[in-house]
Length: 629
Image (cartoon, rainbow, N blue to C red; front, side, top):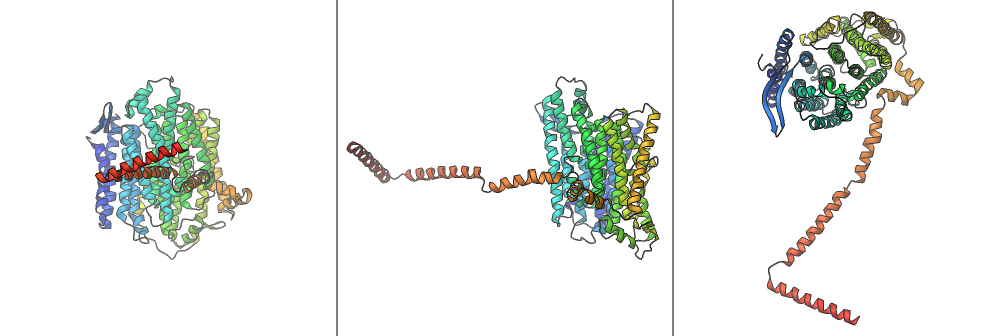
């Protein structure tokens, strides 16, 4: 097992370099290198996980010394414990299946967009994987920051992959800029940690924090708050969430990778990795719970107004990550990671199902238009899509007993109830109610043609062919999204134990009834009638309120009108840069005097005598004029 962590990171990196250098190689070779490298990395990950399950002993793998300046030493070390085992299994396992699906998706997509290089797609995807692994395995904050910035860069490159469309490039810039805002605060937090603790090694930091009291309460709150701002920008929580919906401009496998396995969960990982730091910052910890609760509610309400299938799934990601932040606010670290895992299963299923559906419906993403085009598919394919969305949607809605999402989400809500956080568990239940409505709204609109009639009764004249790279990831994700996915044991310590089984059963019954009631309402409105909830919101509350809900609180409008426009206005006023103009004129004056002085010092004796005579005459005339006056 020596240097196994090095090899886990090495293969995604070396494949990135090869594909970047030899960009014109054949598609088959691109697919073999792009997917095969992630497959090899995943094999090493499985071996590591198996070994760790047998002997759960955290260990450090030293690669080389990177920086050594006085008392600052930064080593490239990889650290493994239960948390990092879970995360790299999610990243490599989910990432491999998404890569495999991408081989089908991108070949179908590039039939219509032949001027985009397939090798460039896998360069970005594999570099994304490499940076996420560095983020997880790095044993110090500088190495973690390196991976942190890397995934931000890759998200920009992948979101704007179809760069010939200007809106895609703008969406990529938006994601990059907003996440950089959070990164700035994260970097400030790192500086404060060095100043306060004189170490950047995460394990040394946690050991020092565990010995602290609250004598310097304020500085701990500031550090934790800086880390929190970095986390909410990467995990797209309010108010730094606005980039995520626009990120749907990228290819659908990119959305699946970002939402299910990598960037969105990096903020959750950061907080849990440094959880002892947050435990001595109770105000920040409560703020995290509040932010998560607000996000899950606003995102759930917004999903009810969305018509784009990918934007609906993006809203659901915001909402589910909100549950993870709620669990963090309750110090339920195990529950948060458990939901990270199950969410990765069913969100990957939903996104790749949506991607397949979009390709099959000629790249249409509007759920109302998809419903019409969907009829051209065969009955067998329609049933397969319906089954995939039912399983994924049920897990997202936390349908009781049979789905993995039920066991993770209900654990979080139950913990908020046991912790006597009344407002949290009430709003958490309401969020679950909203989730069941908007999820099955999407399913019933797409898969229902007319009142009381499923589309299964329509014949199809068009044949669609799918291969193993399309079907295998779907089959695996379907399996993991069910109860079987919840049986995966996570090697984390300090698992929260339920103290009262009666309370747990009773609470699960109540939450199950709420979820089923939400599905029933969705069926009543969208399956057995022609009324659409979006129109009701616009009619009752008005177009303005509906647009605010659609944009998840109208934060984009606030940023544009109170930050961007004033900044652009000041830039236009200062078009010629007054400060630079003043400095330039000073320089011109200095240059003028320099030119005059250099002309005077020309080395000619006759010129010097002339100047001397002129000067004497000027003095004599001045004296005479003063006597006369």
